[in-house]
Image 1 (tube, rainbow over the protein chains, first blue to last red):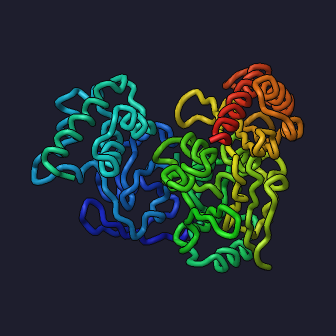
Image 2 (image 1 turned 30 degrees about the horizontal axis):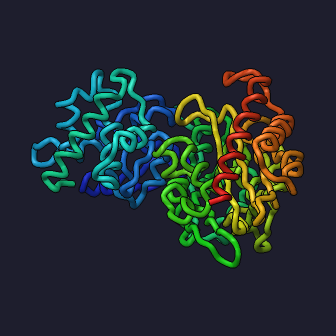
Image 3 (image 1 turned 45 degrees about the horizontal axis):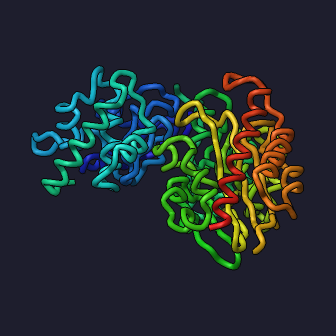
Length: 162
Length: 289
């Protein structure tokens, strides 16, 4: 068996550490080792984006990264969006605009949208569609997801939140 | 899908990484962006016993002009090219290429050097680098070697890189005035490989006569293809529509596609012809600006 690796991360503001097999994928590290099951395993082939998380502020497909690659990094997952029991404007937007039906793709959609709004506070419809182009949704036809992100952008603009 | 087991190594410098490659031989693979390698490991198409993760090696991520070349560092991510003002303004062909590779998440990880070193004819940068006359800088035990892109792609998934070499830089000659380029790709959906794609780079003289032409084809053969007959045909000519159409025909004759889920061979040849015409037209338009 391969030599285990210590992986230390700061996830949603908390320091966590574990010793894992190098081949452990980041998504399994997040779900099974850290116990954060909000991040989903969808296609497991780097297509669908359900496993999208932020590593050092950038979106990655956590099914296509090994856990030791994230050693020393800051992780941000869907669980980190809620603050003091208040939904993040994006989460509120998805709720208000019916940005989800089955909800399976939603954690990844939220993380890609979050990263988009960090870079571009006032995205056009095109910018949003481009920003979520690595995330597949089989229910909504994307219309309401775009509206949800626009809702969040407007709200965050008014509130000056991040 | 759980990939096969491997030992994970994370060198801090290029010499350390090369020493590991030398010591571990064919059992070792370099882990760069990992966006092709990890899926292949999941499918057991690759089963390295050791992964040498070069992502923490400092100083390998840059895009800059220096000494008459555009230099792209060995760890530069596709997303960095996509957002680089220098690339957008002066190398639109590279901007065209980077933005149609996979999807935003993959582009945050994937490296330009990996896109070349993987040796996959379906990858997008090879055609563009062929059109631009790029050079691949490979660092090995005995130092640095510069490989012209035309000699880099040997066969399917095989490049001119030696087992103990790492791509540390890509160099592109700064195009002269009145140059322009474009990359046109047809893909079934975001994230898919090209059904076919064409890169074209053109330099005109003051009178609008073609001085230099570079044309590369994606995913229509066992290696990326340089359409040399079409390039030769264009040099010395005024680039009107009929001339571009003829060059596009020659480019499609250089394609050697095979039929697959993306379509029959004949369709792909016809597609190359149309994409070549569009890429050349855009290149001429941009050269004139």
